[in-house]
Image 1: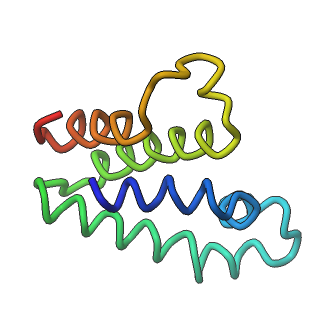
Image 2: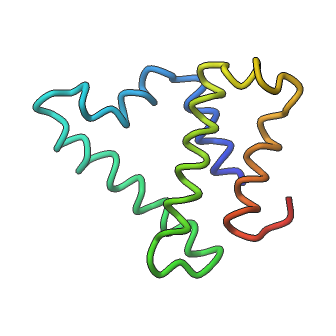
Image 3: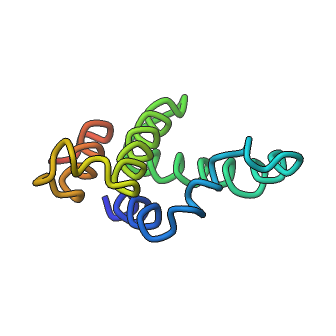
Length: 106
């Protein structure tokens, strides 16, 4: 869960960098390098972390958890979740996502 919270925290503190890391279309001509130096290594590391918790031979669970946490990070960073669920605590959202995909208490 700590890794998920760190991911959301980074998105909140460094919104522009977080956006840029995943918007290959914004870096015309540099997108391939971005994929090779940031996106692919980041996901490989993420997949390793997930696999250390639960078997994930296809990587589908890692991808599903990452997309869920990425969505949480985006709505927290741009504060849109506050309009929908202002009393929801971010750590609770992250904990639920981790529990859903890794089967840990939550």
